[in-house]
Image 1 (cartoon, rainbow, N blue to C red):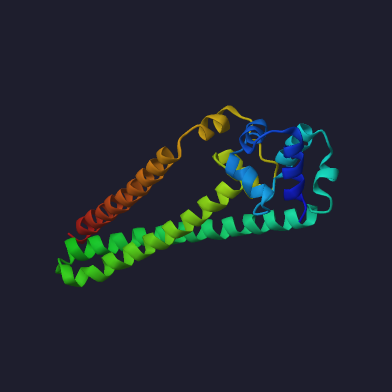
Image 2: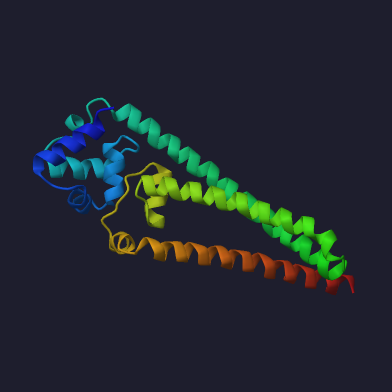
Length: 209
């Protein structure tokens, strides 16, 4: 692969840092580093911006790397789709497990030791969904995707537009704040599963009289 070395060489010729180049094409410095080390590859929109910054054409910049880049991006798109299905499936299974546990504890009035396996199952299902989520997040970071619109474009194989007000605002949010936000959403999801289980249990108790 030659694209990474081309980006690094042309950046050095211009005398700009990875941070400066990242600012010009609306990506993070980590993304530039990933491109230069051939870990990931730019999408069409980023290639266009790179060619404008370097004063060259996309064809000259990639020099035969297009097929490999396309294959890598398509592979990541397929992986994101599979992982998304895994997340959704295991979250649904976790909610069902929480409903079953609530039924066991409230309606059937089983002792804790008998309901514990269900709790463990729910935790394991949540853990698998969380692992898939972390994997998706890693792919998003590699391709510098920070908004839903960017992820949707990547998913659909369309050019990713990072030069939007929301994209720029999202990239200014500190990493720790994003972690707090994701953790909060995970806790909200767990709470929703619990209260959904309580609601189903109440409905069953009402119907069963």
